[in-house]
Image (cartoon, rainbow, N blue to C red; front, top):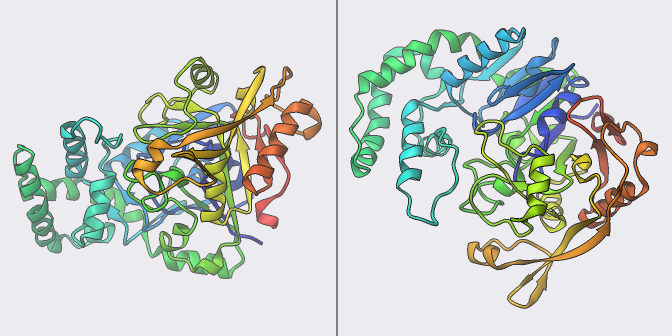
Length: 431
């Protein structure tokens, strides 16, 4: 039985929540391996809508073990708030159903404050488009070896020294930004106020995963954001602060790369992006408005309007290579229903030369011009289709052409937010 990694193949917001929920029915464990509570997943289960930011999508399914891996940066207060929201909706998440890696770095209120202060004071044209949730500063502290981790909450006597080390970095930053310094006691109070609500969920996640893997359990690794937001492989510096590619599933959870059998790339039938940064196929016109309105393109976490454009086969082909994607789950095909013609980007033109990749240089990324191919649209509907026979012929041609352009087959085709409106071609767990 295969273990599956799910990643976004574009700039995130590809519809991973529904696909992960759909796959989680076949999985025994669902693992978050990077990111923080800046990434939103919307699940629609039996007509009920769940909006998750930090918790793995498997928590809404009884009998599944959910795990927050060490590659995540963890906001304890956001965690408690999200648990309460789910409780109100009838989902009780117990320590038996959810484990948090003991070596997971914490996001504190000072991280969110620093994030927002930096963005507010950034010069025009240099804003990243951060959600202001403290993700970047928390990862900085982790790499700088001054982070406070989940396990530290169990050893209160060591916290004052660790807080002093942390503030030796943060207070000079705050002074430089014209802000008041932080009192160590306030930080300590923030940590101790929430410790008792977090510690019951703490565990040695690497060991839990090893035991389940050896027992033949199916593990689903759930990524946040998308490949083009990867700190190394994305449109730097307009990226997130972690590795979002499939390889991070191993490092961010504590399993060896040999435990990963199938990589599924979630891919939207057009392209969207939230925040700043290059977007070669963006349509800042009536086409973009149509896609945004029809596709309800607003961020799950922030409510920010997403920028919309045509499908970019160059970017997805690159994501297929970087992640080792075996198959894609194509989502939101129904948004294209009724369009007379549909364009697909098949290459770029950079300074007069045709290229088949997105260059790493920020300047070059801003200069690339898309080369489009125009395809015939379809008048019928794909919404709610559950078999290929229910799709209009031109819609099938569009899907097949995308497969050719990106060099990967469609394993699943999603035709609405409802989990059952899914056409299964290849079950990743049976690969």
